[in-house]
Image (cartoon, rainbow over all chains, first blue to last red; front, side, top):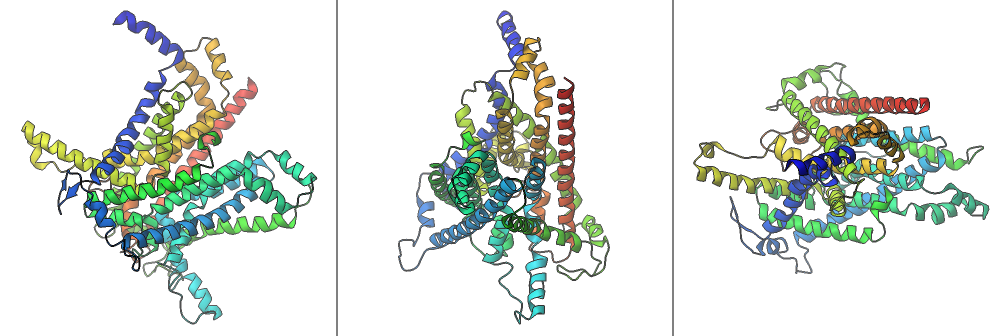
Length: 301
Length: 294
């Protein structure tokens, strides 16, 4: 043992630990807390259960329960309705964060002249990401509530004669919170992509007589594509699985796929929750697959 | 791109300003409203000006001991920070060599980042429950006394810690990827040519150069852990973290005490961000000065 290990130690001394050893604690965390749990979710989604325990089995009854009544074309089942509503939130949040995020990134990348100023503005955009989401949600209460600033303002101007109820704990406030929380996930990748655009391409387009809009649409947008797609993946998956934002900003009254899973988990209905998770996972994977056909993430870091 | 600013610049600048107002405005209103007197409510106008609600905070809200929850979150955050930095750094360095299984590990990392948190959380909660069953059977089989009192292996430093790492580690590794992509390996080779061991060249060459980014990774580790809800929610034992308590309070509390709590946790986040930015800037300056001298 000794003679063999000495050259090994000498090699480590000179070249460092072997890569496999260095990465193993990292890999172990993902094996235990990510891969294994996902495998168990898939397995348990086929298990049987009573009110208080899970029973290992192979049954499709959890899936059958989720899709019960979904073959009826006239009256949409709860599952389809929930997915439809979650898709709608995703689409609205995606479109809003994309438009705002692109504009903000475009301003920082192409209209701010010094690198120092760019850094400062960029950091300003992401600082809120490092603070609490729930606090950022409840901070809308004093603004949007029945007696909040917006309603006071509208009543004061006589634009409405009674407070608007749809401002808070409504689909509107949910989308507003998504935009508030998730636009950063658009800004960062799009800004990153824009900063890699060779400025001489824009000069060339201008010399060739392109207008500002033409440059934006035919040069900058296509070259920012990777950033747009990465941002879209983030925002869409975040909204598809969300239960915290919809819970707090919807006054715990609006259904979402994530919320169904959360409620079932808290009632310890693990097999049912697992089946719902598998379906959500498949839906999300399909969306991501569709989007990643357009981009190679690893090249873009 | 030089010369006078056009109209489009001013329109975009106005848009950007409005966006910053949208980003920061609401949070600032709760800072202000948390400073009300004892008659304060959830909305404007301000009723009085005092630190009354911050005092209330530490008397506990209902049955919840805020001070204890704060300490729990803080300690957990520190653990997550240390593990995020060391594990991500280890993996980041490993990727610079030939790493067996590096491809799949990268995809798992990205998958963990974009996986809906509720699924991760459910999976971890489920795994621990199944593991508890196995553990209980084992205690009974072994005839250990603990079998009667054993409740669960879930807790802050087991399931919750793991859940948070699935969220913080991907950020850590991706940041380091970006750093090492731009890293000039010539410095290291020079160190090796001069007879440095691997550890010496890491400690005295690589680490000072990537230092600011490592501080950034640490800051991500702490701030993301400090506010984490979605992944921790189903993967925690009896004792909640501060953000989970806060989330529960949003539906029941109708006094500015919740704003005081929000202000307090945001101040902690901001303090950590400021410290990290300060250290990173300082480290960068020092490295640059070192380079200029050399």
